[in-house]
Length: 294
Image (cartoon, rainbow, N blue to C red; front, side):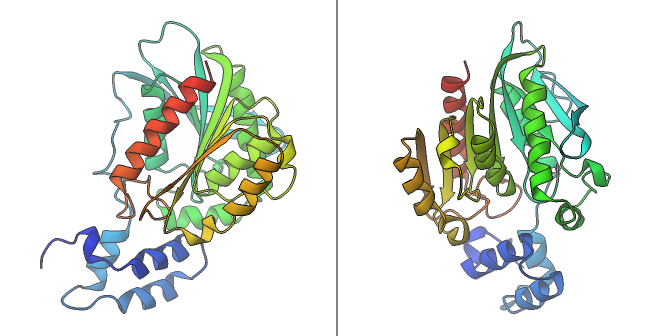
């Protein structure tokens, strides 16, 4: 059988995976529906394998990369989960204090992909902290299916407090210059938007395809850089109202909608990945942080 490519897969399969990844359909229903697309010599196992994340082959920066100092730490989250584990990374050749970035995972805990994103941020010249909101439940369990189940057991507002505590920890860290931003993906995009509402001294926020706040938007002080995939109808439906509120209150923001890109287009471990959109969005993100956090 020929090697599967992204163009071989119907958009409905990506939409179905999005429903499954966000707990809108059970695994059993997901597999039942997915099987209807296993036609023409395409088997269900091969289709499932193709759309599932590959954390081994797609890692961009190894954990022991000599260009970085990267280690797990614990920090206090009094209003959230108590003691939270996170991956703290910085350039190995850093000679002074650096701006900080909190990197917020999707709805499945601190998996290898988000750790990789944390290292990418550090390699770009920042001190990054990628927390694991699943710490109170034992941490990321090693696979995304179980990670999603665990994250559903936590209150999302308590998890928000965990990431606000990460901001506080990073801001006062001896390697940080006190200017801290946040970048998040999916659930982490919602966290990024909410931190902009809740944290008055947040330096900058970059939500990737994140849910939008509906209240207290007038309290936002941080400049925003928002990334959306054109095909991500679920998240995008809330953007017009959010943008109207940002305009009404005179907030500083930039928003980009990437043509023909799906939800999760920045995640290079799944076929939803759109290389052109992801690389452009990340270039814009790093440039934005360098401008706003110096």
